[in-house]
Image 1 (spheres, rainbow over the protein chains, first blue to last red):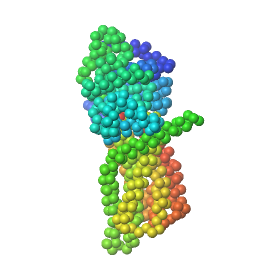
Image 2 (cartoon, rainbow over the protein chains, first blue to last red):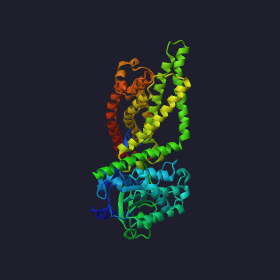
Image 3 (cartoon, chains in turn blue, green):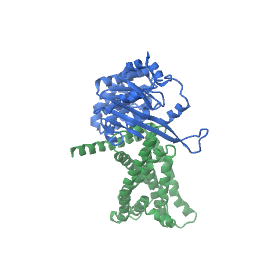
Image 4 (cartoon, rainbow over the protein chains, first blue to last red):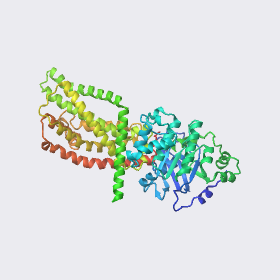
Length: 290
Length: 277
């Protein structure tokens, strides 16, 4: 395994005017858990979810972060969306610190996560409507905007008033994308947006992300464990392994750096593990914590 | 100045969004709510029947007066239950649906988020309380010739500010303990009412409980509502109950927001917002 953390650091200077600026970001979770052999009762175990992660993203850039479950991808997304407080380092969106200026950050960012989280009894239009109000959009603002954005993600107009629970996972994820785009985010955080989707829905969602890239000036951070998705959608690809960002370069450079034919081989060379390999016990813990 | 106006507008629109969401949810679950209302009526009737039970076992009481007093206590208990339930759902329901992270990452201030939740809870709760009181009063054919219903309504509405402040403090509990936080909220509700003379005069309580009762908004809400409905007290005569409610409200709202913000910080530090807890 080649340690390229120094190279990553060199590639992550503090950019003035960068859309996303992350420097030495660290997050550790401590929880009281079931005892392991040799541990005292009530002892708290801690796991480092992010370990000194640094990178920058230019405005309008799409970056994919690859990593297995528990690698820290979701923790990174949560820190950037002000849902977690870091234990060290800093993260800034358009110069606004996520800890010092959370409300300014929240105006700039939106997110799509692996679970399309909605009030299941409410319709797509209702879910989008109330969520838009949180961003200061009145019903007058959204009257035309919601049907238009649902149309853009390929949501059938006649199903707009059906409860979310009646929709397929793929359809729900499209509504989640529409919800995120409705607020015109400057930074869009996509946390495994296609995980668990059937192949057709997956392609449709990926196509829509591609369209966002081309038609919006949003900066997109895509966390995924789909190598093809990362390569196809992002300008740069990062490898996050056990909380450490091992690389963040264009996919071709990554393959070249490791003398690999595919991203999978590059991932293996960088981490010393198969991409889809079974995780060890420590990784199981990490997944729970991170 | 324009920026302040824009921010205020966005905040009010956001609070309206919370009301809108709760309206949709109430509409979707209306049959369940009606079933729950039926249970509340049954529960209230059980309590009010105690007055007739005392008389039938030889007790010398004014059944109409005692029944009205018990009814007011039961209605306030049910009203407080609805308020606390809505506020507890600020976190608990959203966590269950998985929407909590989306709500907490929105640029809406927590004060306005909770205000929106409170406004809907008060509106829905008061409407429900009026129905509950009417149904049960008609059932027992209670006589209230001098009742000042408007005065009682105003007292309850003012008390709601304090109740919301306390409810906000308890609504943070599911953030700290996703599994047991909600139940602890009901403990707070019960504790509040037991010291406030919900079905009896505060005078019958031990001295230390009477002392605590002075700080409970439910004490003044119950006293005020009973004076207005049973004695026909005018609004001016209810002032002695209204001013403590205003003071408790002025303290409990900022205190509630402060407690909630501490809970939110704790949740963000320890990753408790995550759906799996």
